[in-house]
Image (cartoon, rainbow, N blue to C red; front, side, top):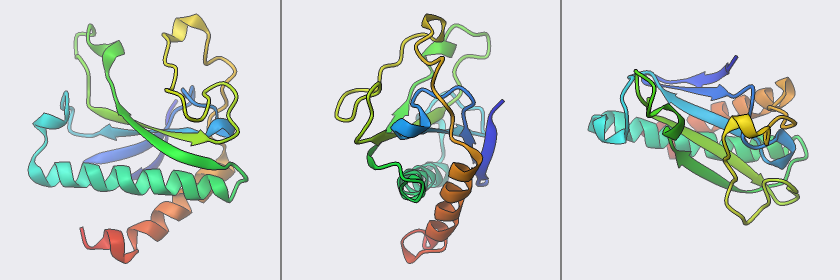
Length: 154
């Protein structure tokens, strides 16, 4: 079950229980729309600005929070997909995956594209999600960033 880390009026930031990137390799967060829209083109101007702000804050916070936990994230990848739900009756719901990319990664290697095979392959079976202390550190970074001059002006 996903754990909620943060939310705004239209979006929620979740910690996947079965991540695509192991916590020691940079971690994985998901920004989920509360609006049940299929893609970003369905957002209003204000919602799109909020979505961008949330993604910026979450990316910065993931990198900063994991740094305090000894995980050296060199870059953040942001990816919208929905491919696995295109054939479901409800179709895709807009969401963004935020992947930290640790310089020391050995599976999802730093500087290479994230591998995203179907879950049925077992590729992700050993990947650990962010733990409670990781989430506390990331949430503290989110709170600090949201009150900074850079982000409170939105």
